[in-house]
Length: 311
Picture 1 (cartoon, rainbow, N blue to C red):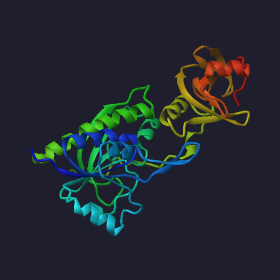
Picture 2: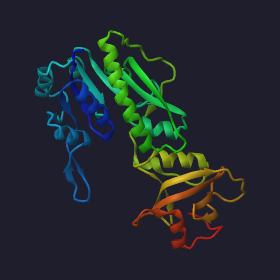
Picture 3: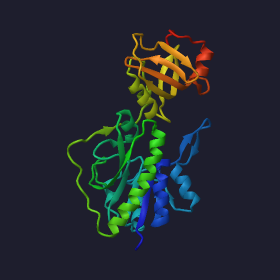
Picture 4: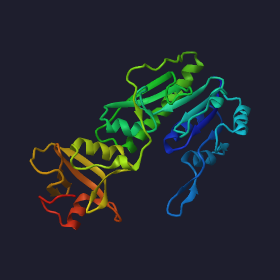
């Protein structure tokens, strides 16, 4: 079967499994990614994971500052692509580019559209307590994740999944989905279906303040924040006016009449803290200016005892 000529748009680690699959199975003409960003203590310009991977394979890499730049648009046209495939690129694709490929622009989106459109669907499905999510291959239009659905694949969300682990699972699912969609398209068996008008939801760009919590919140909500906001911005509260990051926590059914924030128990497992509903077992923490340690080590270092307030 004839290989499709493809231009790939993507930036983070999430996009690499799909990029690699297209590189191995289709005719990958070029990779478009966001320009190098300052990173680390020295704030040295660092390439996106997609750029680093593409350069290691000797692929042509483009880093346009503006997608509407006439010279960039002409460059994309010169490839005569059958498809543009977009996966977590990070910018809205303008009409001028959408109209170039023979079979349109396809987006690999990490949710079951029309639910969780937008920038951070993986984080928000965990935060909302969803039991399943998935990947949608979508025919892009000028809206934000509003185009017709070409194919969807579902996956269960484990109670232990964090944004990191779920992202890894969905990245692999995205790879499977894009290859299946292309194969079906070549056979003439892929039909776009308009997204339903009901069930639409949106996810915003993550902000640092999204990770903040207090023990006045129910334990299950705090636990979801811990899982949803790894690796960034991480769930955090404040202890003695210092930021306290929580990297691992577990909801524990516990009937109590204590003030939220009260330490109910301390063990090798961690620090059990009263919340407005049940209790939260803090397992791994990091106090501002300190290293990440087990909550038990933190409790010992702070000389906590039952009944103390974590505030």
